[in-house]
Amino acid sequence: METDLLNTLVTEAIWRAEELEAIGIRPASSAWKDVSRIEEQLATALPVSEAQGRIARRGAVDAALKAGDYDRAQALADAYIAEEAAPVSLKNALREILEEADQALVGRFQHAAKHVTPREARDIERRSREAGPFGLAA
Amino acid sequence: MVGQAAMALERNGHAPGVRVSLDLEQVLSNGSLSWPRVDMSKIDQHDHNRITEDGAEAVALTLAHRHRAWRIVRRMQRRERADWLLEDARGNEIALEVSGVDRGNIAGRLSEKLKQVAKNADIDQRWASVVGFEEPAVALRSIGGH
Image (cartoon, rainbow over all chains, first blue to last red; front, side, top):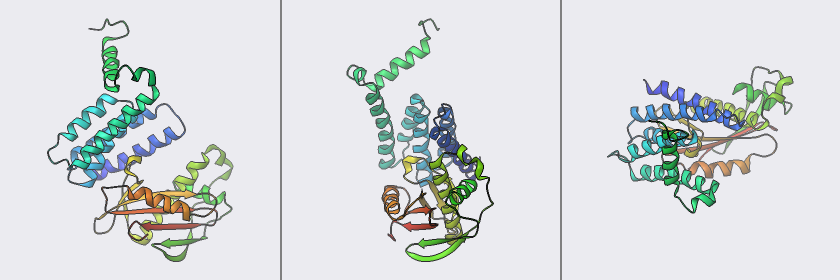
């Protein structure tokens, strides 16, 4: 897909997600998921050496977190950090985005944070989700 | 966005053709703003602040295109410290942060927004634009030109 078209789509998607968020409508998280997917496509189309490529990479990770999908954010960040041509500034920015999300989680669950790290808490949550409500899922 | 700009102007008592003060890199001039009239009876259905912010974006982007021939590349997420990525006729990228002021002076907001867009590390040309709706005024300034 052409980057001009992807830029138009991401503009509309960000606009929609911001509007939904501003009026406190719950589906904002699914709107951010759309943003993350389009940013990811832009990141695939644009090299990390270009500013727009870096904007798209940060945007894909950030929007995944706003959508509440930490696993996706982590996977995207890992992939972008592993890119050979990725500048240190981008790698640091991606780590900061994830760190901010961890700190936000610690702030919300201060008591639990004394016993488990944010990453451990997310692993427990993922295992519970995969196992189903009574641990009966195959 | 044009509808929001129209509401932001009309709720301040302005009509199409209103005079606007322009500050382009500290060069002062005057212009006029025209827009299709809107039904103000439904203004209560819109968020007050969104009218100001979205309206400001419409006016600022129009001014940037009219006076600098910049075109929109894309909207950016908040983390980028700028609302819009634009490009000039030579393909140089520009980060533009926009804000609106419903009542009062725009000078304070402009320096606040210039500080914000200065934190964008990826784009060389960083600009801020603030639109005032009470006495229509638009400022468009760069980090270097501040």
